[in-house]
Length: 364
Ligand SMILES: [Mg+2]
Image 1 (tube, protein in one colour):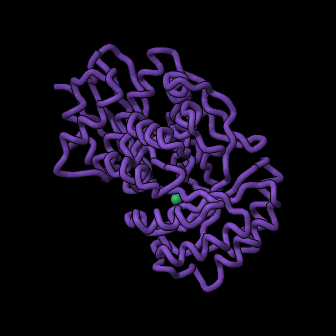
Image 2 (image 1 turned 135 degrees about the vertical axis):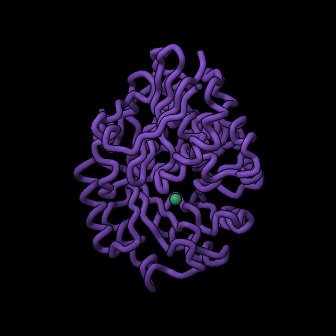
């Protein structure tokens, strides 16, 4: 069996990928959202010629080999393009074997608890508190994540006092039984992160994500060391597996958060999860929108022994992920079903594919 064609379907923030083999098998994958048109160009120009004619069955190392082959262009777009093809190959393999990806990885499809993930820093503390309490009641969420500080903020807040106001306001509104996670998106220096972290601990926050600029691993390790009552989480931007191993070895984070689409696909994400398991750390993949990345994360969480208790599930109204595939993801009693059909267990909406910009690379 050989890879015969690779197609991209690009529309707005998204680029879906379809791979077909010479014996007619096919699978669907996705590159990371945003600037997806650029990922599509990289896919056809730099990755397709490695993939076409290749045996698609060796999923353990195929992504590594393509990334290595493009070693003059490390990481970001190359990994995104590789991830698009690699995730399509998992779907293809699952369909051939009649198993979900979760089952192929040794797990079992089941409802998996989700945390409602807020993406908004513009929202006022009282509005966020009211919104999350409402979602707790309507969907049964048992955990939420909110945004604190400012993105790459050099210790500044979105506006003065927002962080100190939103954390207790949300805690009070959702009650003590609901887990509260926060994401600082690279905001703080280590001393300031530790100061903020003490306030988070006082409010029963369990997960402090990306407290410092993500590349400042020593700072992040200092924060993890200083704060004992909460877990420091991070790694969504990290795509280099050697760097991942260093992060784990130095205890920069307590919880690892690979993004399946940034890191170059499922096999590489599974490897990050395994590094964490070896060190006694939990894993929760980064999945901040309801495109296929959340489906990939669900299958991964269903299969690993060190899954964090909750999947990241975006709660914002994101029109570009509407009507993308069936069955659509949905939260019931605070849980999302890991799709149990073959491969990813979802079918792309044909109208969406037809409306997207189509490009194909094929053998010959
Ligand atoms: Mg984050």
